[in-house]
Image (tube, rainbow, N blue to C red; front, top):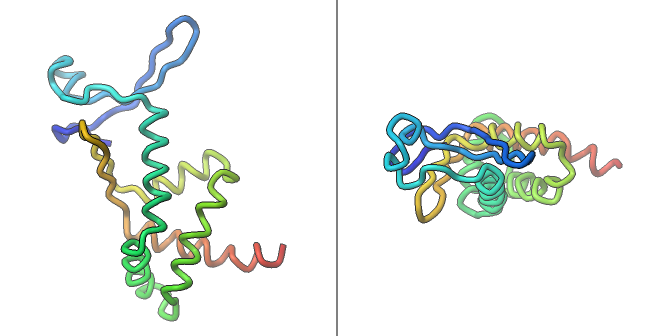
Length: 147
């Protein structure tokens, strides 16, 4: 995760009145003070939820389906665009059933970079991560049908 100035944002936390508050803070702020970055701190839960929501939405977009299909054909020659679409779309209803560690693994697999801007997020996905996810979801598909 990176701030508007390109500096990395690091996870941090504080405790107040017995309650834990997690957030990401810009390295510019750590080194140079609060005026070092227009987005000095962001609440961890909110930004993490926004990234996951955006990734889930991106996996349903036609552009990502086509790009993933084209890349997946290099590893799985006979894969169809429909199979890729079905695999990517199947993740969304399963997401809430996954353990948090598996959700985190998938996000790390898929997300290359998150740029935090005052007006929102810019998320860059890993093409190889999408291809790997499609292969995993395709191999799990017969198991779900048999259950």
